[in-house]
Length: 236
Ligand SMILES: [Ca+2]
Ligand SMILES: [Ca+2]
Image (tube, rainbow, N blue to C red; front, side, top):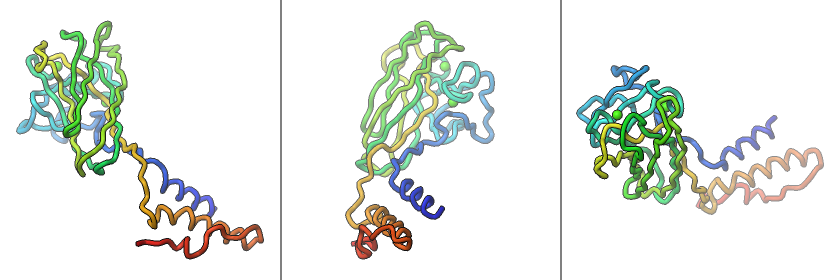
């Protein structure tokens, strides 16, 4: 049992980092004092408007916080980045990052099929880096949105990074109010953490080997592969 626990701990210590760094990435949480979108939707405006979607701040113009009015990619709620007619909006969220480390953004994209444009354009940016995505709503409906997973990788250059989704309907001179839709957004770190020489990252496996072999040695099954001085590590 003890050996199994030690091995589990060692694996956990060296496993890739995979937790979602975003909060409320699926837009399922509604801020206290705000109504749930329920079976409909409502507009959320930039500050000083009340931010009804926790952790997400609305930027530029208003967005539509959508409930079961249309099919979500995940859960119940999603966003139309174009809020009311004439609005071309966006949202952003900041999260902790390590400069120089690589991150993977994944999200689901669709488009409001209720009106033009047929192709919904959107910019995704993290600080100074950006890319653009289009979604073709041909053949799509509120009950068959055609949600499609999109991926994008970026390298953080600061301890805090800000992810922004911005509708481009206004920038491209298109009809505004029926925009790109997003749901189920995640950011995970993908870069391998390279251990510094002499840190516990190197000491752990060797220490584990020594401990296991000590257990085995009491049964006459082997000799240590690592010296005790190596197992103790060099924390310089
Ligand atoms: Ca959702
Ligand atoms: Ca809308």
